[in-house]
Amino acid sequence: MKLTVFGIGYVGLVQAAVLAEVGHDVVCVDVDAAKVERLNQGFVPIFEPGLEALVRDNHAAGRIVFTADAVLAVRHGEIQMIAVGTPPGEDGSADLKYVLAVAETIGREMVEPKIVVGKSTVPVGTADKVRAAIASALKTRGREELAFDVVSNPEFLKEGSAVADCMKPDRIIVGTESEAAEAVMRELYAPFNRNHEKMIVMDVRSAEFTKYAANCMLATKISFMNEMANLAELLGADIEEVRKGIGSDPRIGYHFIYPGLGYGGSCFPKDVRALIRTADDVGFEPVLLKSVEERNNAQKAVLFDKLKGHFNGDLAGKTFALWGLAFKPNTDDMREAPARVLMEALWAAGAKVQAYDPEAMNEAQQIYGQRDDLLLCGTKEAALRGADALLIATEWKNFRAPSFETIRQALSTPVIFDGRNLYDPAVVARHGLQYISIGRKAA
Image (cartoon, rainbow, N blue to C red):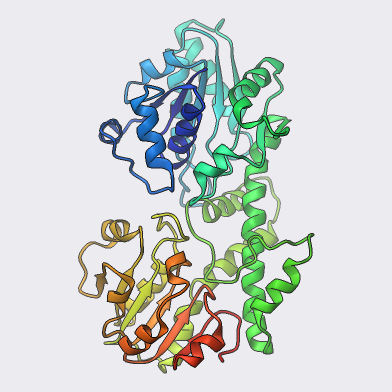
């Protein structure tokens, strides 16, 4: 099938590459001509396991093309997929200007019927606005006879496993009342739907809402577990044992119940705020969602508070090793990462940071530039040299089995502040290190 994808960001690029991999003819369009040129030269702007090879191979095979030419893009695909960003406004609402600009472009340039697929995360009712924008552009041209459908098809990608999530989706949500559009969407996703039926078809507004409800549910689980961790600490319980106990209940499960420093990234914070704003707009008080956001904001300060207490508030002039900058493993994304909150609090207290992350070093350089109080190190061991303590903010696999002897010898104060509960407290204690984590008693 011929498919056009508007937006070569995280969602658009992954989805386009995976659809090209199964044989679809995909044109990707973006207003950023420099990004388009870099992609045509083989440079993939984001880190995601498996993505670079997928883009390179399908581009070489001619199944995926990158362009800044919107006219070419609209003329190409029977399906027009909108995957542009919906950044949060100052009030937390999703900004739809890019989505509606694409809709207007489609209406201005289409010369045959189209199926317009909303892939971006958007508030309930956005499909109606997209439909109106296209219809208005067609009316201006005097081409009201051109038929089109607007379908909601939200993505459920997890950064760090997005390619796998696309290749083997748990579910494929399609919002449409059109049997013809549904048939086209079934053909588009047939290669991913062979093992068993994964497509769930519903009305458009329910599909739009499903995306927000899913992300807010997961964010709620994280905030709940972090609140339980803080309480467990005060009660003398071990949250890691509690996690195993409650996770064994299939009604709860083990996913998203790891205590830590709160959620970050491009989805959960933005989507929780957007749904809060949507609720406010219709006169509904989202008490639970506001509490989820409040707990998450507070949780990002927990490790700094522990650090400050340990050193009796005297952090000025001290140097801290920081392992992990990305908001989660297997990505270089630092958007709303807990590590950023931690670093900025340390700097405000007069401390220095020696940081290492397997993938997010360039991103940190882009965000913070040159600073006297930030040293980006080439290895996790280099970050330890001369530091007063080790702080862990991201649960990368290569942090899980370190040499505790090396850590103890490198630190001027033998203490680890672990925001991700990576280690067994008893094991760390045997190596002569003090260990302060989340929701557990020190050994």
